[in-house]
Image 1 (cartoon, rainbow, N blue to C red):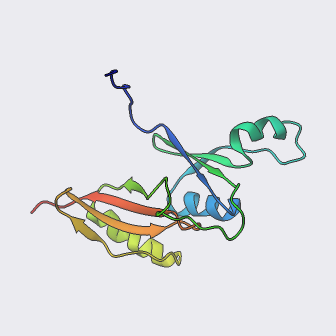
Image 2 (cartoon, helix red, strand yellow; image 1 turned 60 degrees about the vertical axis):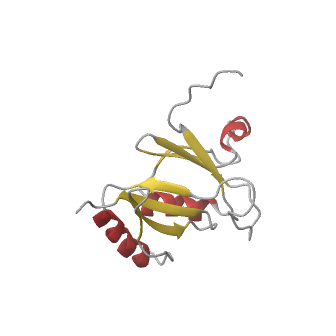
Amino acid sequence: MPGQIPTGQIHHLRLTVTDMARSRQFYTSLLGFEVAMESPPPDDPAAAETFKILFGGVVMVRGSLLMGLRPMAPAGDRFSPDRVGLDHLSFSVDSRADLERAVQLLEDAGVPHGQISSLPSFGIDVLSFDDPDGVQLELTAPTPTS
């Protein structure tokens, strides 16, 4: 049997979205990502070459995570965790208090969300919500110890 590939942490991910402006706004304003690189306008001479890398989208950064948005999905398409591929994406936060603050921020932004729930066997509390295309997201905090 061959040896294992020595992988490290996730370097980057890219999400396919239906509406670039809407998704960009969601991830930058609500989750604090910053745009690191974006596609030039279609009439820019560099647009065709850049399209091969960015697909008309952006690359954003938050901490050590690079996340791209790729506006290639047709309007009206929705994410489904029941198809092969991604089920959900979870971002860590430091504490239960951060989850409680997130509930208020999600409500203020009109983003539907679940309740904070505890998963004691994993030692975490989670808060679930969806991005504008229905990609299931979670915030995960260590369960407080008593």
